[in-house]
Image 1: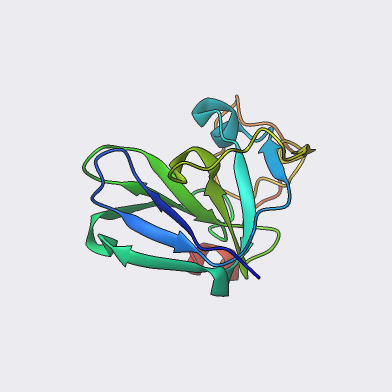
Image 2: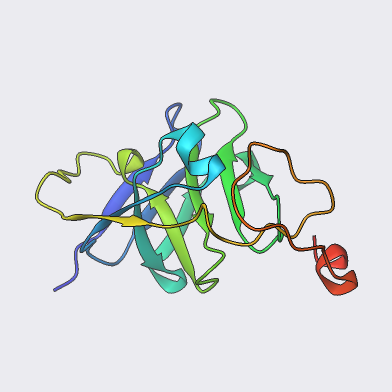
Length: 141
């Protein structure tokens, strides 16, 4: 039987549930995840349900525009993101799950620093091979 795992941002304005049991945690070494010190659990899209506060979610998109990073606009907490490499999944901030003990889960490092940068003017500190953005990638951002 799958458990329901409630979660929220810091101020409680954004509330969600996961209808899937986390099996592992992931880290990422891309420039964004390093700065936010992300520790995430990968969840299928169908397992994430926003219960309250969808209007409080602020979206940050960069690089290819495929990953969608959501933050609470009131308290600033990174809650979850739609994954670039698996767009039918979300990476959920494990620390937003209420009362969840993640100490028994294995942690897998994922390599995001080597993913292609496809923006026109990437910042010098962003790692990854530089690839000029195509017309279709520019229009999808």
